[in-house]
Length: 497
Ligand code: ARG
Image 1 (cartoon, protein in one colour):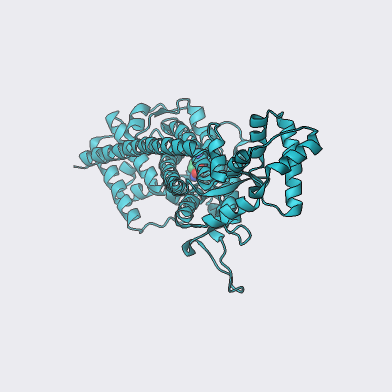
Image 2: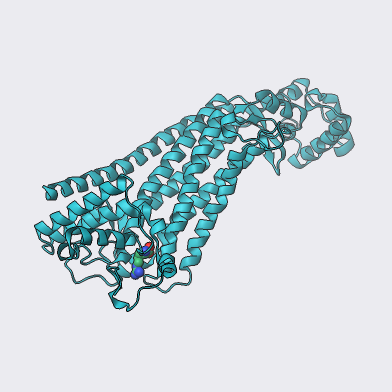
């Protein structure tokens, strides 16, 4: 007979390699404490339902608390002969208080609802942590944006000069993306925070469990009601990874912008030494490896999402052991996201911005061309397409003669209008001076969400308020989980005394 508490059905113990292959202990450390809490809540409920005597409950709880202390002091290492943390914890209690009492701990529960519960308990904290890190990144971005309200730079499309804007405008764009990530995580949290416990292996249990009671002891907002759904569905885990992969693809894009801007060719920013790396051979190198790794780790998160989608897509409904692999992908995704958020926030906070260089690129380029064409449309009544043709010709000539847009003469426009459009136009010197002045040009952009200084100011204010509101939302989530944890601890203490 096997030494395992589970393997009575088998005549022989699987060999070491098979046991290792079956085991999820490596991925289970992260659910260790959740599993203890879940087991405590389950057993308290069993006592309240008169399934367990008070004496038995006290013994089980005190054994679980002892195990928790050993785990926290770093004494616990689970051998891979155990299939998972669930077997390990139950076997520990059985060893500790005897099978007469410890053997009752798993009454009315299956590992299937148990592991689904543990994952959700860990995911709640993970979503809170990711959210807090996004909030810190948003805060760094808002501080930088405030600092660089007046920092003029080219805006790019196709990685080519497009229009004039400000660094603040770019940073505020990142903020808006990240605020949507927070909304997604917030919405996702409400679906994570439901308890599958009490679903049993798939079809419930004849033991009079009180599912609402365990859910409430563990701080859940409700139940994953249908017992088949509770043990089979991984759509919520997929939703979490999908939100994380989406977030990472944005972080990666931001990292790519900053990497490019930190090149000698751009020279717009310089990363702090603390966020840079060097070369083993080229002594001059200062590489933006932190940003490159944010980009690189995005692959892990997208891979994790892909991994889980692939695990579930061919399964029959009901628990299948394939699902054990989901945890690994979840933890990989969560770790990569948390690390990336922290690194990116620090890199942005500490980077040096070269304002002169950004402005110089605007002055030597033609990012004011659209402002000029729009001005000719408005002031001279030219159809926009004609103004576009005129300015297109103008820029071609200025590029070939090496003339800057700031040196543009009204005469040049008038002559070109005659030549290209066969139109007589009179252009006012003041009009031209107004449009080739970068600051005045920004003032003339009036559309909502443009880099007009007034719009920047408004967005800064509103996004700072949004940040504070999200901080509040996240704090509430955290407080509510902490409250539930304290309540459970108090209840455990009550039954221990
Ligand atoms: N270690 C398993 C997992 O992570 C626990 C559930 C096992 N359930 C079962 N029916 N074998 O998914």
